[in-house]
Picture 1 (tube, rainbow, N blue to C red):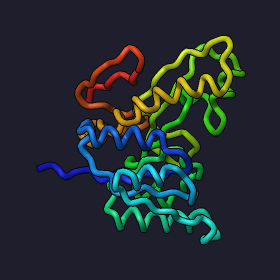
Picture 2: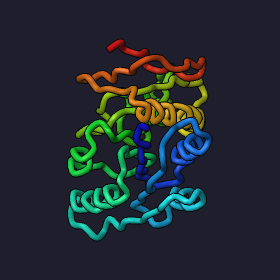
Picture 3: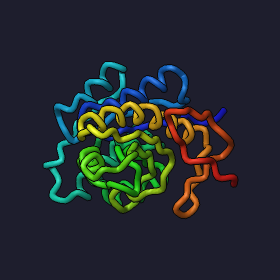
Picture 4: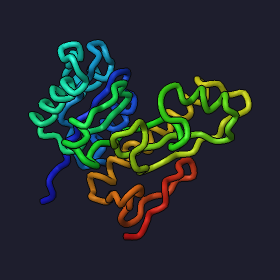
Length: 220
């Protein structure tokens, strides 16, 4: 019997993407176990979401370490204690250091509300709307040492309307985030993802959806 993937989530805010993944796990769409949710914010609603579903929720105070690496050592100790196989960043507002990246090579994912490599960083929905691009969207990618630079797993495209601002565009993008993040996790747990240089090879095939453009499988 294949080993069940144990998921650890790092979150700083409301955790709506966390909820989408929890729902997919509980519905049997993702064969995994939610091991722990960790936050650097004591009042993050993501922690409450975890508790409501019987998932271990931990607040780890970032002020206890002088360096970012010190904090990540504390986070890593918790992830290892809960035997986490896959780490998901879900609205996590801290830059992770090599302490975590090297401990989970190509086993750490992030969701970004833009079509990378365009518009990395923060407040990108407003930046896309202000720039005048015709399309934006969201990207699930593996985490590497840069800011939003890791290999792309899945992307969804969202049209930018003439009267859009950051809020209206962001709301439509968020709906697609809730669709593609669980899908990326599912592909990982089924052993269908492989990183080859800048590209993520998707083994086999998966469902297509008119509202969700997924990077085409690369035969390998």
